Image (cartoon, rainbow, N blue to C red; front, top):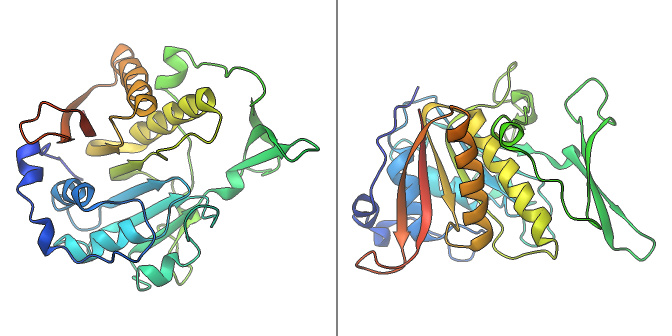
Length: 277
């Protein structure tokens, strides 16, 4: 079990990014400075701990490969990438090839957990959340109506929101699951929010809040949650709505802000690292 010491901006800037093993040609959202943040946290994890990378529409394997190649304990931690693994924006179908079929790297495909419904003109009108890992995977748990303003979760509902996904859904290149029982929990979570609106800004805000809440609630105590794109208004609003709700319901956390846009730290912070009490 991890007990993360939150790295500071100085710790992150002290990392020599020039020494990174890095493939510029591989698809992926991760940047070298984001890799510095990940390295400062992941290298504190004991062997056998789990890193979960939430990469919406971007689970190419580049972030997982960064950990393998650049973290001193990369071969000794479990690395799970959560995505729908669609090639709409980036090439995610080469995930295992990109991580060289490393046995400690797992693919958590959540594409069966949602269903988008379209009108006759081909425009998306709603998104169903399905009970994909329940007794009947066709059961609709909730529906987000994209033609109307979103339903905003109250403080208690947001703070307690948790999507439980069985460990058997995370498999490596050989089909071996992360574990034969239990639900996915992790010691370091990394959220890469998609940086551009897909045309449903209010719904994207609410969805991001539920992702943050679920990641925090599935994070083990003492672990850390890294959130990138923190300077973007949607991500920033989602963060404060979610973590104020956590505080107000007795779920405690501490934070460090990293990746300032200016050398003297007078600019905007582009990353947040949260430690769960």
